Image (tube, rainbow over all chains, first blue to last red; front, side, top):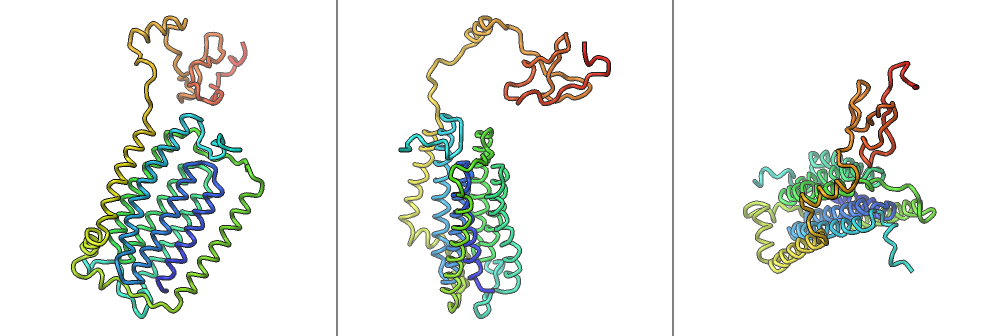
Length: 99
Length: 256
């Protein structure tokens, strides 16, 4: 077994996240799927760092985590305020800008 | 510390047996968590299976010679981000389960097909691209102290500007969350006097009847019975869908 297996696993996780974004209706679950995709990319970065023998990949994964934390905070606040106005967290209901 | 790193050196590009075992244990957990997150209807269950995935990934980072990033993954993702998700789910709880109605017909199948195709594309191309590559491993980079020291050296020299930018990003995010979550009160705060006046004017100064605590059940969903034996709808919470539990009356008292 080589470190490439990690990359294949991360590709599978990324795909699951992307399919989840397409399939799920609840805005919070869609958000969790995005987190799964970010995690998959982090696994890729850590594995690349190991394959290349330099720590830059781990540093970039660290930055991805920081950005993900900021993104989650703002995104969940937006979902909360939409829920407060529309009483729904479904992505299908927020269609005011349609047409 | 270097000796306590979970990963042993690579042998001719192959990972050692212990790491392979760890991968084959953690990988299925991560995959199952991801699939469970997409398939489970209840959003809280989805969040918990995502937490399992993140824990498995964190352990995998530790195995992959990144003890710092692995622990940060567990602390930040499962400790902070998933808890934030769960808090928001509690606040948005009523709507937390998905509707089964498909807005676009056949979208699920199309998404599944696209997912499988994408997974095949990426996995095959990665597998081919890395076929002849001999991995270097991080033993040299983790030397000169530990993984944490080497990472700190990189963050505070090569990536210093990006690191300073993240501090700006974090404070902007914190302020943004406060602004978005804040509600401005558009009427004066009710005082005890106004509350008492409103209560008298409502025509019902007495408190609502409590739920029925009968020998057949003491849940708050059990309605109280009025003197004529009928159910008092005011005794259960407004959000209680219908009357969940009908108290079983003793035989002979069923009808008046």
